[in-house]
Length: 195
Image 1 (cartoon, rainbow, N blue to C red):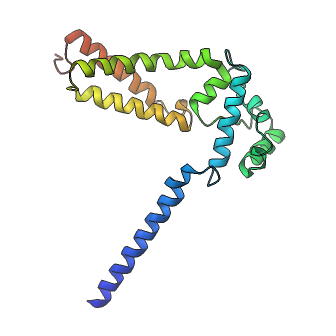
Image 2: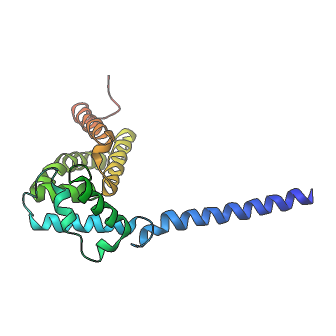
Image 3: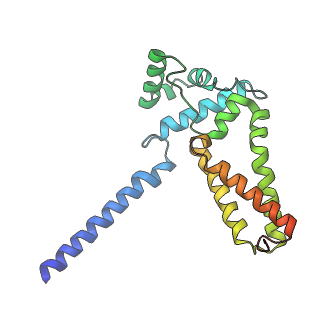
């Protein structure tokens, strides 16, 4: 009985330590730029912003961000191991076979399409978010369906800060469902009064 108790305590201590290690390695590491892939990710985002600032209105062209982002790494950013690897692969394989993305949907859009393209891209989201919030405020938050879809869309948009929204179709499905829910609400007066 005493042996089982000690084993249980040992397992709990190991479990707690592994959880602390996991949190330290994966969550708190996001606050520093030199842990894990953060240095390369931040460098890529900064290079993407620099690229966009060079052509702020129209950007450098759809699909051409890679060619310009590679040129916009600072000498300090080029010292990062992952950035070195990206640049080496790009030199060996070419721009189209070894692209370097901004690792952020909005930075990538800004770099490639400028402020105009980014605004056009964000307009449907802003439109739907505004109308959904407006309906929820009028109804005192009584529509669980709208709240759920609104939360899902905001979550998808936040995920765009860490990669491309085009890798998965979820954001587009949620955008369409939220827009449909808004239309139903506006036509019937309540999301729950459907026939």
